[in-house]
Amino acid sequence: MSETYEHRLKRMQMRSMRRGIKEMDIILSAYAQRNLPQMDGVQLDLYDALLDENDQDLYQWVTGQAAGPDNLQNLINEISQTFQK
Image (cartoon, rainbow, N blue to C red):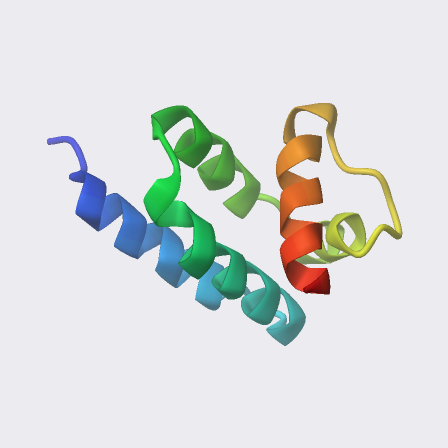
């Protein structure tokens, strides 16, 4: 059985809020709330892949302390801009 669009958004929003480290909870939940409803399937797939990454790595990528993987770099840049607003 495939996941409905609405269920997928709710699942991804929940995964964005409950990361493991509070900083990533705050950063990703703000990004998800603002952006997930406007994303298409390809963008949601990419964000879903980002959610599988380790929080410590994600935090370093989003804050510019380390470079992220090439396939996620544009998304990481978008999240970083949301975080800095």
